[in-house]
View 1 (cartoon, helix red, strand yellow):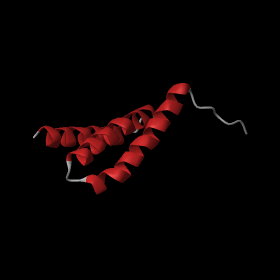
View 2 (tube, rainbow, N blue to C red):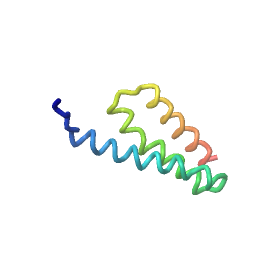
View 3 (tube, rainbow, N blue to C red):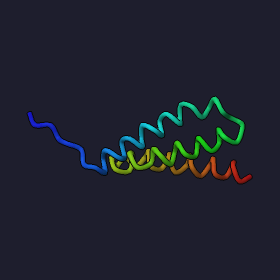
View 4 (cartoon, helix red, strand yellow):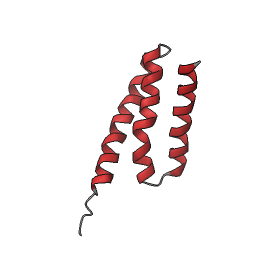
Length: 76
């Protein structure tokens, strides 16, 4: 069975996705302070390329929603 190699775009998207997941795990422990809000925003931002490349459109919308909500909270 031949294994499929990831393209450079897919590899970068996966690495950013892992970083975003780490931020999602860390952020709740930093709330309600400002760094926690920023980390949540970055988590959504870093996770976005992975789900976009994988064409998981429901998760793309969830990540955009996370980014919008925490950006609004930050600028409030």
